Image 1: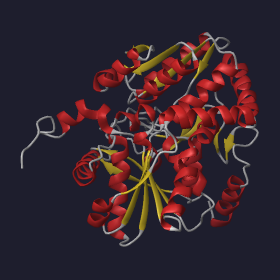
Image 2: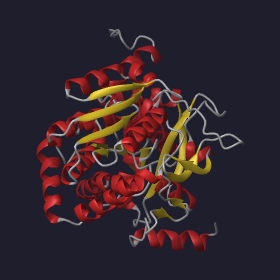
Image 3: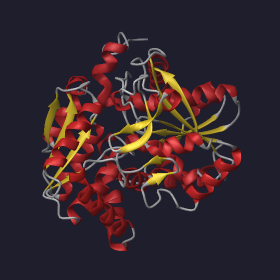
Image 4: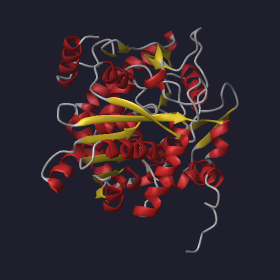
Length: 414
């Protein structure tokens, strides 16, 4: 794509022309779904249009975000990290939102939407468990029963979150088919929805899937970037030089980036999971190493082999362990508005340790990828102002951390 085409596409994005009538972000996106789901998706799109444009819905959502979720979340200057990196560093603290991550913004908005659309029950999928916990909490709040599908591998590595979902009244179904992680959980949730498109509302957890989900999730998560932008100006009198977020499916990143897209002077960087190597199956760096294809109802970048078979992925963080990415991210990469890089498991673990020791903040393993990418950029560009989306807190990762970081479970005395 030449620079003229890229500029034209960015202009259209900034003017609100994407997604277009076919649910596309330029060449990406769309709605690839079984015939039985088309009426449900069309109903959902109509519901989204009426709710997002409705002052009453916006007021209710705003009230709940303030009084129940605890928004706005703080913007925290982190001076020890900043000194170590040679930069001014600020963290947007989604770890301090109710249930411990950015996932609640989307779950609450969609649960209110489900209730308004007259759904009898909610189904959801989860990888790291944060979206499952957020959905369980939001459904309890709005009074809807909820079933969460979760890959059997993730059920094991995210045991604390599974327990939280049970306590919040959700039914958790471990998925034993396929790769037994997030992709398999999404497949299973779709199957349930196909069987009951009238009664069930599918509360999708990331900026992926068939139209209108990537758009709906972006709109609900953009509260992150809107707050961060206003807070940054208030705190520093200007804008950051760069905003950095981790990217799996991409909901926290699109939420942080979207309100900054028109600020040409602000660089945007998404950090994917570089895992433990560059071979297929050893990482989850979809944008860096993927090719276009269709997965879970949308045309985007995917990790696939030469025959177009979607591959299993690896990341130390369950929430980044997904072989696709939201179509809007695919567009932002194609037009060069966002730089996408990756951080390895080891780099993420090292950034997590540093953040804990320097700032007394335990970030989620997902967010630790953003910290690792931001640290690398800071050292290449000294003296800049950096905004990092801290998408969640690391309590849920303790079982993984106690295995990955020797001695993490036992306090050291020094």
